[in-house]
Length: 73
Image 1: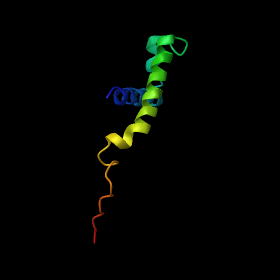
Image 2: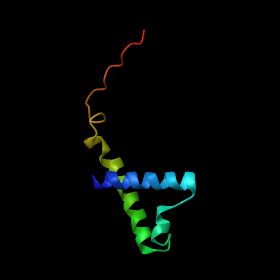
Image 3: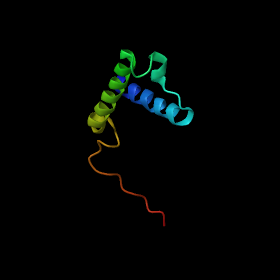
Image 4: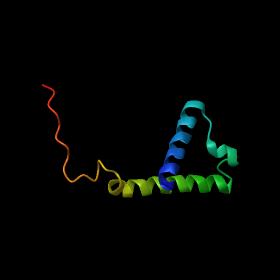
């Protein structure tokens, strides 16, 4: 759950950077501040953790057989 929250925080940070040019890390002193670097490292590690463990925790990805596709005709 913590990893998922950190991934969401990282995604929102990138949204703010892309849309407004504003970085959450700037609140903590920018990239030179130890706390900002720690936050970035934790978000990156959370993303890696989610990539590695996703299939075990995702109901759709852990299904043994793919669901049959419904015909649209």
